[in-house]
Each structure stands twice: as C-alpha cells, then as structure tokens.
Image (cartoon, rainbow, N blue to C red; front, side):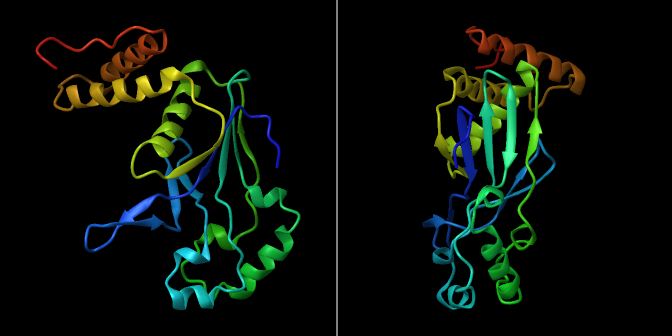
Length: 205
C-alpha cells in the first residue's frame, strides 16, 4: 500500500521479559496512545502464541498493526488500519469471526471491522512535535512498541525527547504550578527544536 507520508510506523509490541528475566520475542497486544486517549491494535501473529493457542487460531492469518503516517510538510498525522486497504479484508474478517470464540488472545479491536482513518490536519508545529516525540519513543526506546516502516525522523526529535526527559527529572519535586511547568516545558522544547541547548535550573545537573 503506497502512502504519501514521509514517515510511517506500525504498532508492534516489542520483547517482554519472562519469569527468568530473559527477553522474549515480540508479542501480540494493543498500545495505548495518550494523544488519542485510546488503544491502537498491535500486529498479531500466530507464531507468537503458545502451540495449543496457535492451533486454535489456525484459521486466522497474521494481521498487521494500526499504522500512523506523518506528512511533515502538511503538518498532518493520519492514523489508519492496513486491513481497510487489503483486498482480502473480507476473508480475513470472516476468519476472525469464525474463530473468535477460540481466539481468546485476540483483542476486541481485532475482532471488529477495520478502523476508519483518523486524520489530524493543519497541526501547529508544537502539536506535530508531540506526535513525533511519541512515535520516536515507541520505535527507538527499549522495549519498542512499534516499527518504523519508512522515512526518518527529523534530527531534532531525538534531542527533544532527551531534553524532555531531563526536564521531567529535574522538576519531579518542583512546587511550581502545573500551568507554569507546562509553559516552561513548551519554551524549552521550542528552544531545542530551534537548535538551542536546554536550560537546566541552577544547582541541577
């Protein structure tokens, strides 16, 4: 499926630790997106299930996760479901419906029809930055919760994420009003985007 976006990511939950503390392969599940206030369906594969569960779900093909595309020039974000554009979507949904009683590891969203596109147009630069920072955290920080399918993040995004984390750590015990902290954070991020080094309050490192 071709897209016009410069960056596209797919929700696909990263490794989890087992009882022995060892990292296992990617797993099936959804990801909560605080910018949307809801869960996004993650990629689902039978091969990630225990053998008995995989046999019970043998009629269900592997499913892609929800995707998010970023058009940086248009300052546009599109949340979309690849199943909507799959020529085999009807067959896939039928298989899910037939098997849903046994497919207990399928989520509610995965049993439903493909999700309609959700578009955020004409975002303010700061709003687009929040989306890019969220996406960067999902694809670049361990454990990852998404895969980058195409494109590269602007260089400033990683710097903003790191500066934002430092700002949060520095202010974790602050007595400032939340609205003041939000304003300071916004100014700090704007400065990082413009190429300035983030200011750290005196006495902090």
